Image 1 (cartoon, rainbow, N blue to C red):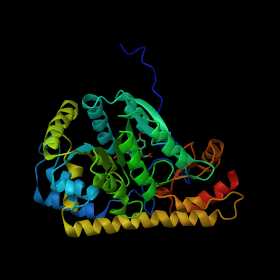
Image 2 (image 1 turned 180 degrees about the vertical axis):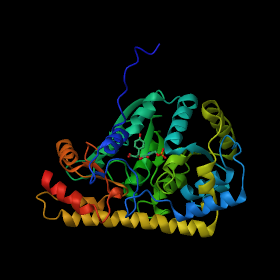
Image 3 (image 1 turned 120 degrees about the vertical axis):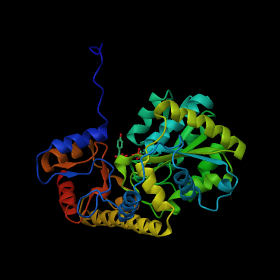
Image 4 (image 1 turned 90 degrees about the vertical axis):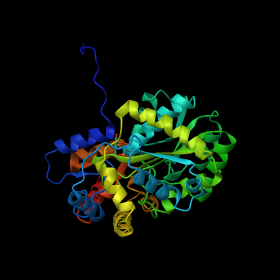
Length: 394
Ligand code: PLP
Ligand code: TYF
């Protein structure tokens, strides 16, 4: 039965993780996978999460089934975080939000919905984009194209290419936009870029799908949702996939959400009914634990403040690592100052695949072959080791 099944290629990033785990060198450093590590090199358990867990245990609550669309108070808190508590869309009940299996699960629900109900055939993703975007949408039956985004010469945005490519997309194309902290480049759009993109998607009748997996890792929780709020204010219909994997350090709990902005409360009701069917026929209903923790934190002002301070701490630590890298690499022949201008967990370092290879084989430092490094895995103990090795391989 299974004799003719071909071996599938490994996910390049998760495969790198496996290779790192198998490496026996004591001084190895993993800058591959997008995970935030603290100053001690550990994946943090946030204090706000710990308190919410303690509450849950003390209450002795059962592990019941959730409604198909997840915890209601969670879905509402997600909406406030993305659209702002005072959004007219929320007052008019025009936003449908369902709990999902992480940001990935939200993307897949959105993809299935567009395929089934909106006759979606084409999707456009940034060049480059998160590795899984292409695979996910192509598995969901889409023809995946890409639009220009990164300019390797300037280590910044290819603005002209981006706008030209978006304008050339056929109507009804789903356009995946990174809401903030672009993965893998760390290069983000500014206010005017977003306004221009909003004009283009309206004029060309494209379907925007904002993927926001790093809210709070850029400038602030509120400012990182700028694009979502801008699109919301325009009144257009669009999709948002969001994730708490990174911002709550809840990677393995799979906590995310899909939100759809519709034209009316009536639209929203019908959309929700179909979305629930998509969920029911896939996994019936989502898991309770992670979303329950996030809901407790987001809906309790004290815990919210604690979380937002902890997230600020993570954001500022990453920024200080960027500055440290730039300072340590100042003597290099090539310019690395762009690393401090990029934002979020990643930097497209400009290192070539050969240089990345050498980092791994000679120094036990793991990065993605595209040159992407996870700045959030640096700390004051390992940053000099990394920059010294970079100075050797370039
Ligand atoms: N979208 C982007 C751009 C990402 O970088 C990630 C990475 O984790 C995801 C979605 C998926 O997030 P999750 O781990 O919550 O599924
Ligand atoms: O880009 C990253 O490293 C993170 C983690 O299939 C990740 O987004 C990577 C690959 C993948 C799932 C998550």
